[in-house]
Amino acid sequence: MSLENMSNAAVHVALFPNAGMGHLTPFLRLAALLVDRHCRVTVISPQPTVSMAESKHLSRFHSAFPQFEAIRRSCCLLPSLLASASPPLSAFVCDVTLISPVLPITESLRLPIFILFTSSARMLSLFSSVSRFIPSISEMDSVEIPGVSTIPRSCIPPLLLLPNNVFAKILLEDGPKLPKSCGILVNSFEALELNPLESLNSGKVVKELPPVFPIGPFVPCEFEKSENEEQRNSSPLKWLNDQSPGSVVYVSFGSRLGMAREQVREIGNGLMKSGFKFLWVVKDKKVDREEEDDVEKVIGVELMKRLKSNGLVVNEWVDQSDILSHSSVGGFVSHCGWNSVMEAAWHGVPILGWPQIGDQKLNAEVVEKTGWGIWRKTWGWAGENVVRGEEIGDAIDEMMKNEGLKMKAEKVKETARKAVDGGGSSEISVQRLIGEWKKMNDSC
Image (cartoon, rainbow, N blue to C red; front, side, top):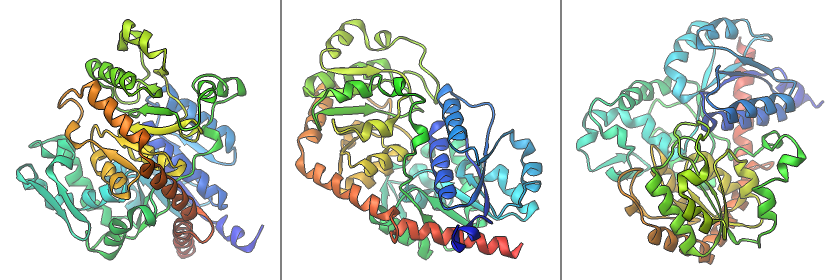
């Protein structure tokens, strides 16, 4: 082991994700990144998990990394767990959604706390400064983020615009606490979000904000793949193997939000109208839960018969990175959840953005500005209106036939991979972060 690796081995970091695959996935990829750099990592995951997919994901992670100390406990036991860690912790990294309950604990233990922000740097700029706007945000036509850009009302998360909304109150409470952390980690990279990252780190957005470390994209890991060869060769990968390069549209709107069945069926009509082969992951239930109804019941028997002639429809959790990396996939109809955006960037897949909730319009703006995706702004938020199949089919056709998008997507892929290579911007940021932890470790 080199002297640098020996030094890194003295760094002990605890990671504490919130529940849900959208939070768990980036935390486990961060854990793998740190252990690859010879840090000691403890993963504290809440019990019970909210879905079978999450439980299986954790089990595969623990099997792949037996050297990790994995603890599944409730929040009430957190103080004793952190205080008794051996060797003592150098730092504690928690989900931004947990900062309020965790901060008093880390302050009492004098334990350096870092935040993993699981969305874009653009969304971080809004989150960190939103307390300035909350009192009057429901009456504003736009929000001006110093040094970043103007965010139109139509892109502001809808729950922020509702008077006395619980979500708005949480942001009002959590946002101002970010300066109390020692640093903020984001799954992004300079070539993708240079402007917001520079503005955040220069103090233009919030003067007291700690350093923001862009350390992405988090690379998909081997442990995320199916447990055995038989599963890996089953549909949808087996079906994709039989398709022509770049011919398939992948359609998925993430694990947290189900769509109304009328809209689901219009998507089916749109896929048929486009004429392209497709792999469609249908979700009918909300917040990470497994689907209960047969996919034919959700879509309708007659439409399902038509769909089978040109594509594959599933309603179970899939390894999205496996799908996006497949040579037959030529486009991605996505809600623009940040994990999905970064996976598409890593694999160089063009995006047709269809934001549904929360931060997703801000993320779609990142994709659109970078030029590797398109976005129909008139489609609105989830439930605002029903987008008809003809519009959906036309948009898919535009994405799949646009050579400029393909070239831009390939360029984004190249810059994403350069960022995490030796000497790349994100790798430098990781080493700087570990260096900070070493200093904190030495000062204890």
